[in-house]
Image (cartoon, rainbow, N blue to C red):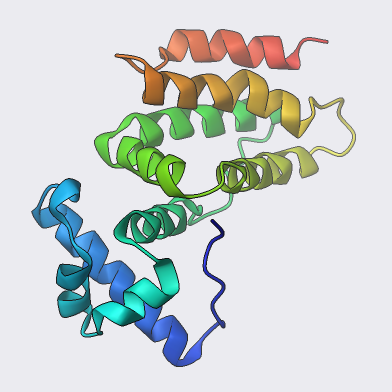
Length: 178
């Protein structure tokens, strides 16, 4: 399944935003398992067929909403050092994704979209940080994803407890070692 491709701006963007807003509101009010396409459509002021035509089913729509929420609002924190920027990014990512909303976003995206969407978002954030330091030896984006982001996501999705911050710091040191 691929993410829906919508025209930027215009009626299509307004309809998408009203549907996304309806989903976010319903998820605040009730358990995600009980959210239905007819409820979303009624809240958004569209017909259920609009949702089915664009997303196919509620799980794909939940994933699309989650993916939109995973897009960073701001550039990664600039601490003045590559190591500090990566550490700040990793701590923030661990904190956000370990929260109940973050965990639910990961479940939704995992359930309905290609995993590469998450890797693309994370890779873009990490590349932004790496690009700030063109004259420093830097670990590659794949190394950072493999040694920092992947253990965070794995522990959130498949473990009783998220990664401990101390372990995250050890993994960052490993990522920077050659």
